[in-house]
Image (tube, rainbow, N blue to C red; front, side, top):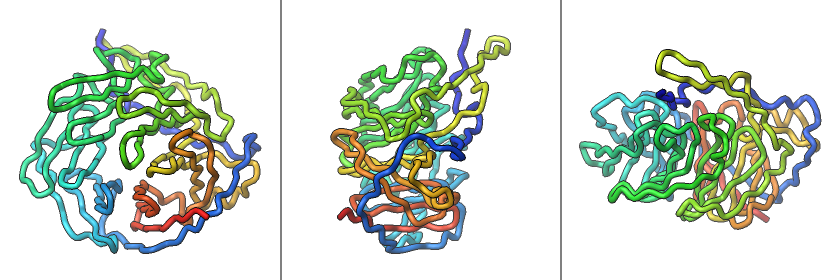
Length: 332
């Protein structure tokens, strides 16, 4: 029987963890200066901020072009995505010094082109869909996918030039198409440390660039069992998996530079004021090499408007629904 693994399209909306009670942990506040540098009111609707080094790009919801930003966060160039099909979400965007990469999850493909080239190249990464991805280099891609139609997700590092593949079974215990272990995949700037942070429970999984597990370290919250329940429904020869009840999200977004991993938390600590937590995103930081907790800080933006983050050293860029804002973050 064929298993429908296009589970991203079937994921139900997640709800935040109730914060009307104590959650059993406290935050330590970093001695940090967070100084806004620039802000730019967007003349268009953007979806995601991404980049490489000081080069910044915005994707937009139709996935027909991306926009390059200058140092003042103004749009200075449009890169048309001349792909010979309409890209269907979910998609992910990456950049190198001279290339744009698009990962289309449900088709199992990666599209790439030089910034000013006319046509995209396309490579099939997997027979079925994948649910998470990273572009490590012009030849290496890491995905979380499903080998041979299996409902157990695995991490795969794929060389798109010679077809070589490596697999890791980190968080592959449950045959639920990754519902219970869905999360955030990101890397440090050098891309020699890969991080997977589950949405729905405590934990940081750190792998090297060969996707070998280096360590598992808890986040500071107290959610160890997210109690994810999955329902299996058959329709002819198709089998579809659904989350059978709302799932409480613990970790919302994550990103890293070469010193710290930043995790935007959905849980209010016992020593936080509710109105402050509701107004500003709180970023918990962890040491790259060990996963140990370094401290937390608030980012002075409306958390309801945050769409994505990009960090380059001490420069932190935030895409909001109506603007792009840059900050300088300095530890004391």
